[in-house]
Image 1 (cartoon, rainbow, N blue to C red):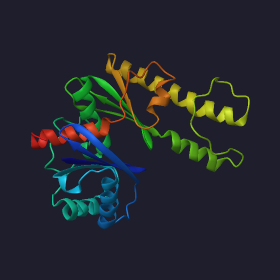
Image 2: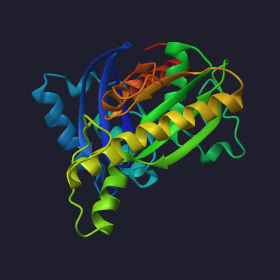
Image 3: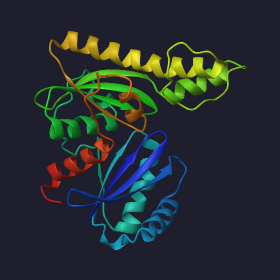
Image 4: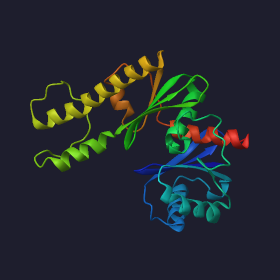
Length: 258
């Protein structure tokens, strides 16, 4: 059994796979100070509640955008699973594609993993749109290589900044408003966030396609992807498990079997 660990800026997802089949997944808030023992005890209990045997985990792969968390996650793997994990970005891990950017080391692990997953499932060329802590749009060419992209503030990050900087503006949930023109402060904020991001996404996709010189299929992932896909025809597919799929595919490319 393979354990895939996706470390984001907000949450860490642990997912158990038998072959390429997802058995279960568990999430915990990202914390750079959490120890190997804390990870291990929490994960042991979470897996036990779902009747997944900790001893069945034979291999681990990690993708992280929070480097400070890596030492303790590696410690957890050694103590609780008696293995050395594959880590995206380390020299011994072959992604099976070439990042075609000025400095390949700058590309976030999540963006590279998503690129691998999207191409393996949907072919190319394409755009991967990720609604995470940041909103990213990444281009994957017809051969599966990462060709660069765009980073913009995430939806919830923008909401938090708006609430913090403007004393009279409340903290709100992200929803699709019925109309663009709001009649209350709440409606105005919801419209600005929702339709503002829809317009940004549509505009960026169009500009990417014009620059690339052809139409690109757009694959959206992240928690807010289904909500924003309702507001635009520019998103072709919503795939919530893209990053986990990519981690499993990269493990397969390096170890050949699962």
